[in-house]
Image 1 (cartoon, rainbow, N blue to C red):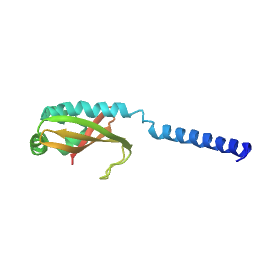
Image 2: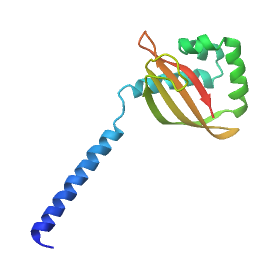
Image 3: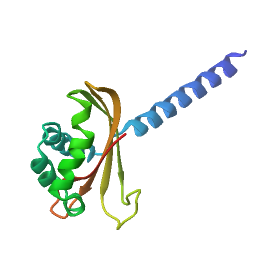
Image 4: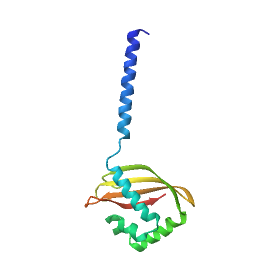
Length: 147
């Protein structure tokens, strides 16, 4: 290989490496709203994990409170949360933002956070929390799903 060819090849390698690192940096960039919604989800989880039926329902968003009365929410916790035992660990896997919900409904400002959780009687489960940025500027939980 001539010096000129080898220098050209090195230049292309440097260019490709630079482009790859820039692309990776953009792919890893976090939405600036992520910290706020993640904190809102964790704050809500404190109430939920404590079995605080009224507190977790009252801290939730309007869509949640309108769709689930206190009695139904208490039954849902008894049916899904209590049987799995105490929380051992919860790790956040992803946070995504969208303007529509997967189940339809009017557009809005939504965040969906997926967690991998471990409980004493269920070592691995995935939990999805949906939050809405409500008119008062606060992110609140409007949906919870345990898989």
